[in-house]
View 1 (cartoon, helix red, strand yellow):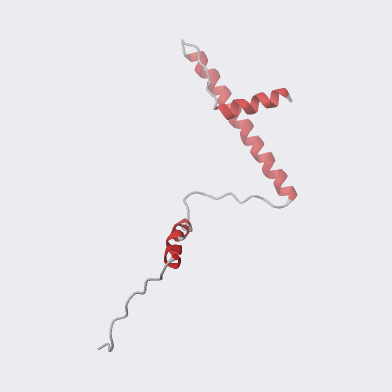
View 2 (cartoon, one colour):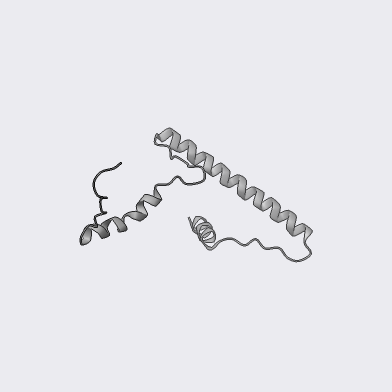
Length: 98
């Protein structure tokens, strides 16, 4: 059998006890997150390749969007308008001015 008395949990006086409570949220943030991670390239050549890929993806997406919009406008009896987000519209206006 165990000998001796049970040990008490010691509470730290003052700020030392509160400090652990403040940093408790940081331990929760260390859990792995869902979804894939994109690691940015560091070498100049790889950065250019990544930019090119991203621009190609944007172009393909905009072409698909325009094509679907054209199909929808031809099929619908009412007028068809594509709604863009406000940041997207501002970016296009800034590019047109340049």
